[in-house]
Image (cartoon, rainbow, N blue to C red):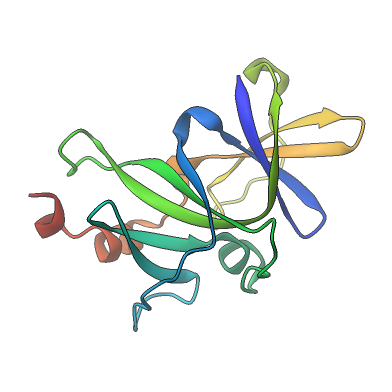
Length: 155
């Protein structure tokens, strides 16, 4: 299986490349006043508004660093109210410059419960340390799903 690798500070994380729609440089965003601080905003992608989550802000409490390796990653996000069961959600990640191939069976439980960060999934070891798989379907709390993906937008 192919994974996109990125970092949050010194830790490495993986996204299933099959969930990735496109990887873009940082894009200009329209702010969403009243949204949680880790909701970076929204941008126009092929005529459709796409909400953007600042993953370092969500996970670490600080905004993503604006560097050449910081990317906007468009993901297939499961959403029952969407016409085909998915919609596009974008996340901002740092140091998203590599991919890796790993057998999903190489990933195991970290042994730590993370109820406030349900998106933190299984871990795999390599010579450089641990890599943690990000569960895209668990990125957003239910209340934020309703804010970013109103039923009117998918009717």
